[in-house]
Image (tube, rainbow, N blue to C red):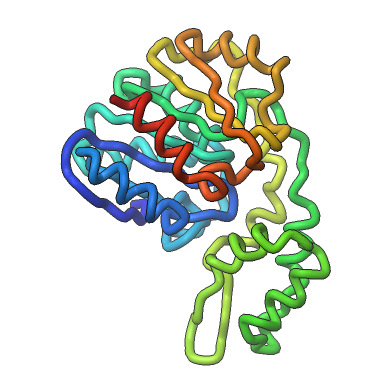
Amino acid sequence: MLYSKIEGSGKPLVIIHGFLGMSDNWKTLGSQFAADGFQVHMLDLRNHGRSFHSEEFSYEDMVQDVFDYCQENGLESIDVIGHSMGGKTAMLLATSYPDLVDRLVVADIGPKFYAPHHQDILAGLNAVDFSVKPSRNEVEEIMKNYIPDFGTRQFLMKSLYWQEPGQLAFRFNLDVFNRKIEEIGKALGSGLTFDKPTLFIRGGNSNYILDNDFDGIKEHFPSSEVATIPNVGHWLHAEDPAMFYELVSTFLK
């Protein structure tokens, strides 16, 4: 069963993080949604955070995990927020189990195919040799050679933990990601549709959802709208959490 953090009471709201992320990334926003009367379920997907590691890693696997989680916790009617890879998972969940999902929020990802583009990040992660017992500062210095963006490094450092005294490790399953990275960019299957209210939110400085993607989004999600948060990139919910919260809370009311 997936690891989760549950906060609040009321209508279930399931939040699904992006690639290399975890539930902790949504702690502040999750608390805000809980204060609005939702029972917020912040999940760690398989091979991420505190959830189990598996050699199997695909959107179908992740959707089955989320569905099983909902069954186990008696969640029969949910709203869903998904960012990036979590947004793809949320799209497939909604189109596969439309009776389960009431409203869908997808953050900075579309249903289209995305070519592999995490090479620099994976190179930086793979450059860390934990057998020599590096410190947190040393890990960041190694990654800096491959990942110059401070914000991206800080995001990745959140998955660094003390496996035992003096021994750091990443919580995510880097070995499987190295082998299955092409899974991340896969398109939503043709013919899959979700007719209920759907909100896509994109970052104004991000190129994940372009204007010419709108028609493709409408094919799968005919009741969708697209909102843009200006002056933010792909991690829009972290860069402007106030506007992200405002857009989502207005949509879910």
